[in-house]
Image 1 (spheres, rainbow, N blue to C red):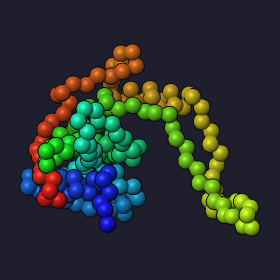
Image 2: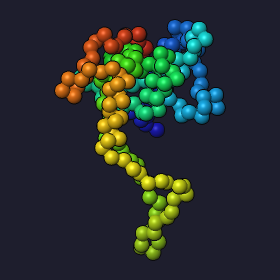
Image 3: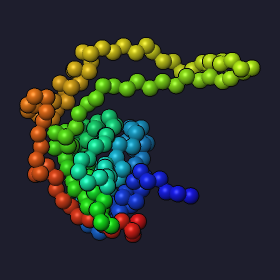
Image 4: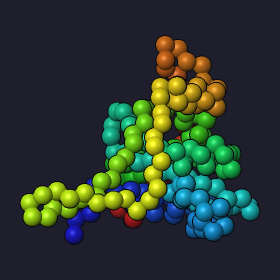
Length: 188
């Protein structure tokens, strides 16, 4: 079976090994102990009695890094795990992963909020050549949204990050990124 080229399992394992070599203990996310919250990060590790969360973003690109972070990740990063949540940029380069740590506050400078997507799921089947639609087994309320909601979210984002925007763009610099080490790709 061919390995999914977009899989990030190997970089997660490499990063876990990297943390263990630096005295961290790898932990598991237990929703029962965390208010039934969804898993908000890729790696959980403790050191000196503190739990740290690491969300890994991997690329093998050579010039521009584009990706996404979920609302669940941002809620943890800016909420109950503030100060203990880090985004890890993992660059695959010449057989190694190079790890850079960036705080959520610095990561905001490089992030934008696109228009919302609203997903749908319409059950149907084909009977005697005709489409027969099924019903949903859940109570879905009406969606009420307008441009004001989106603009309010963008303003909240700007307020949270303390960004000073120029012509709609924020600017970061190389000091936002801290090189923390590397690991061989082949070993994972």
